[in-house]
Length: 409
Image 1 (cartoon, rainbow, N blue to C red):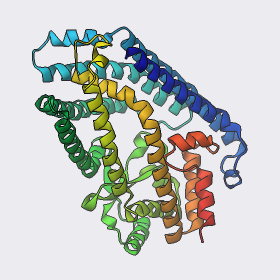
Image 2 (cartoon, rainbow, N blue to C red):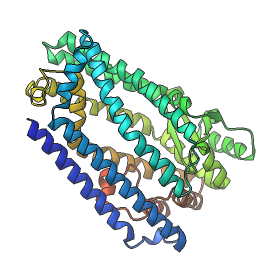
Image 3 (cartoon, rainbow, N blue to C red):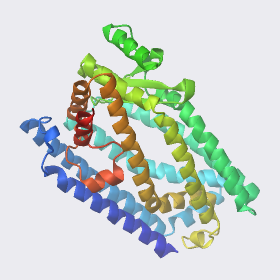
């Protein structure tokens, strides 16, 4: 069993590395005609350097995380951790939570220097970073608290269900799925509150632009009071906008950097794109797809719990719920390849539809201009490898989006 798990990790690593290398090598491919005018020669050379820096950084972080995981599993680190934690308390729930807490802290300590380097070296070098070290550590602390509170609650709940139905795993599957489904729906409704813990998000102030947005919102039947501005500029110069929430919790959020750097026509086009997602109920569709995928996750969780040899192979004394979560994350990686292909395909399709909606309700020229400006300000890849797009891209490449908009009747 140990050899199979280790082999899965290595095969996935080789697969991901191969796809990333293909994508990197494609950076100098022939530029599609629709995006030839986006980067001037100087900007293009800067983008190549940015692309190279991120590729190298991605390779280094991937090697480090994979190597450490292989070492932990090969040398039965989790078996040792089980014994150390079990000596601290007799409570099975606390043993599980402490086990996961130690693993989380270890991964956090490994990832923090890498994240710090990415933000304050790579992003800063290319003029994107606006975050201060103080804000970095505040965000890290908030993320740590949120992970501990929500993660501990979720693990404790699943562990409780397991203890109640460990002799009847069909009931465990049923109640685990119901619990996770309810939590997922709640997250969709409440995610805007999580965002506000990290960011200042306020209703758009009165202005000529607000009046134009009012008119567009009235035309499309969307409550303009639910259009907000996020203070992204305190972290980055990059532009973005997003639509989130369900039912009365629906809202569109525009980054302040986007409002600062785009014309009113371009902003209205981006807004119309986000309202297109609302009109097409893309968030609701995404929720239902995720609810279906939960069946896969719960099924894999159950399979691991029913396979004691998976635990003893790595030095544990028997079935351990904490190690089950870790092992599930490992075994999910090959399973998530076809899943991500399907999910990203559905997402790309929704993006094309939202682009068409925006072009129809504002103008093609404004939507194309907005996409080009987003590309310039965010240093988007103009020549991603088709296989990388097929597997990883949730949005179509910019060239395809522009060509699709221009082809609209």
